[in-house]
Image 1 (tube, rainbow over the protein chains, first blue to last red):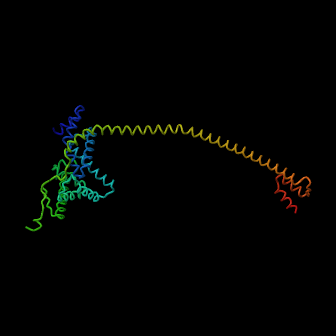
Image 2 (tube, each protein chain N blue to C red):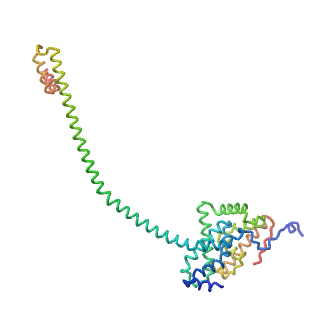
Image 3 (cartoon, helix red, strand yellow):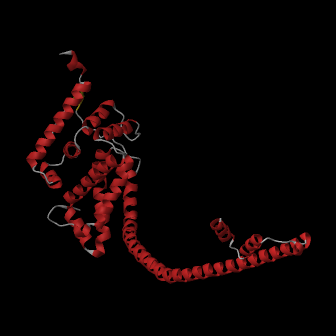
Length: 188
Length: 150
């Protein structure tokens, strides 16, 4: 069942609950992984995923069909993740680098993280990017999202996104090569 | 091939380094669907509770103001009455004490007269004058008078 069909079910009061169930089934993993790559911790990602679904459910009436359902959902997810990180920084009164260090430290002892040294270095390099650029990198590199869709989600031109992704990847490549002689292949 | 090239590790696969607990996504779906109506109700309930709290607070403040102000006046009246009665009682106490003191003084005077046979004492004119002033409670005037006279 595609997004349009799911939304048609949601629009109809009698089939709304069924439509929402299908939406959860379709998007639960996509949303979780998008959040997890931003916040790194499973517990935080779990809470935020549930928050995002509540937000989606509460705002289904306000969804306008001028964008696709997936674009709308990803936008909510991304905004929620970025807000969470910003609030965490503010709450802990930490600067950007301090929060990154804290996140990496937590990752080292996280049983739900593959403790491969190279992977840890890669995550560290990704974390060194500014939040929005990190989101762009994750969406393109891990989710292989087309720049066109990213452009709608982030309200940014495709050329700006391509350039941002290119610089992010280059920065990561340089960081890994410099630190541990790890060659990071970028095939996007 | 250079040594650095030989030691170079390659990261080619987009391996997902993050893991989730077993059956996590099945449970997540159940949790999301079971939380959804609850959270929605919670949201509206919270809103209603907030309004109810504001209304109750307003009623509470209104009632307190309405009932407290007259009670405050009454309290003031009672306080004034209590104060007045306190002063009155103090005066009574004070008058009683004065009377007792006078009675004691008179008694002492009688005793003094009896003991010293005062009736036979002869006083000079000046002593009489002093006694008169003394009895009228105007001893200071006597002194002044005498001083002037001197």
